Image (cartoon, rainbow, N blue to C red):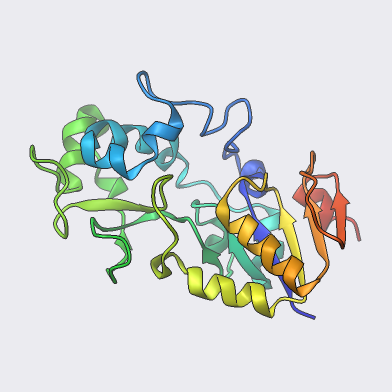
Length: 238
């Protein structure tokens, strides 16, 4: 039996990383002038790269040194697709996890989506916080003309107005979904496309689903079991 685990922000909460839609969540706190849904877009990166990079730095990059928790370690030998960009599953030793929304510690050249580009280490440790705006623009190779294709750098993260490509492992993720004989969703609100894709495949195959969350979202599926608990409580049951 092949169980596929699909994780969301709730799994990393114990590591001190805010969830996305909680009271202190990433998607409830924006910048002074924009909502998070406006900030986390390719359009904002292109039109106002300084605002985009500063927001991204403050809301995500400051958590880059946090460590994995017991759930990440428990998942280290499992088939795993994560929506999280924190990279904690890799730190816990999972060598084959799919980070379907990208990675906080990586960058790519700014490119047209679908192109095959190199994923490289992000220059966060070189940022001068005393001169944050100019430092970020310089490190990301963004001139007064704005981001330039194949010259400037872009955080390796899937934004609201972008689509899944194989750069983010979508082909491998879909194969894991089709090969799975069971799916376990942990700490996710089912508000992103990847979870709907997985539910559609699970429904087509008629395989069992487990939903693990303190306030689990109820889904339309014939064979689903709900665990109203944290991911840590779930793995500690035995």
